[in-house]
Image (tube, rainbow, N blue to C red; front, side, top):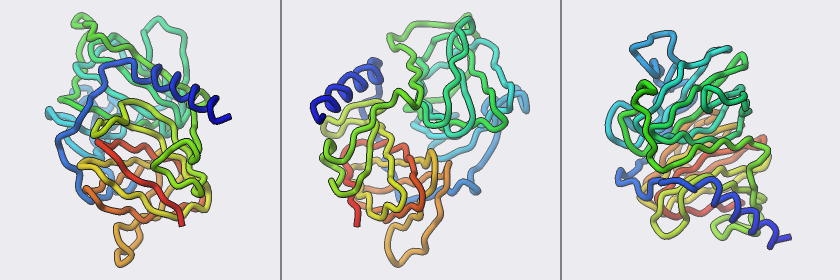
Length: 279
């Protein structure tokens, strides 16, 4: 069974990372929290006003040349005109149903928990088909711009759409940085786990989990995709309730004390190692 899981992991990792993924992030993270009800919202494309999706800041500044993580909300029935972006982005669906593909492609509605990546320069549309639709987007460089398809180019990367049912989950017995008794699962999304390499995973915490995540790298950022956690940086600190789509960052060697009532999925973006332990 273990060999089967490892083979599936290898296939999935190749599929998700067959692109020019970023290898490092030079901006050190700090201990910070953005709760879902404290997200700063604006327009993703200010020139289009309320015809544009709404955008909510988690970290960084998408209008500058720096890494950033932000939320995007789409109205039911939204469908963008064909366009390109000047930079590559990666996304996880938090609510609703989203489609991201060539304008002539048949709709592939990605439900909450699904993952996709959109290469710089590739023409596409984005559409939404539920009453509430939200995604988290991760960029390594900026500014995040929308440009006409007349400026399309091939940067060597290829788009990826992964329905949540096609994610490959590994259990704690197969992951060296997760304690075996924790029942935590992980799904690899992009990047490399070689030393000091930037990468991202989904971490699935079982209902009733109580434990810690210790950051061992200069850069650690986490977004609650589904469910919710109680979070503290120390036992003296007041617990903060981080429901989807909240965010927390951690400085090097900081420990996040967390507990969950129901199954919770967290997107973790790190520039190195971290450890997950359960009580």
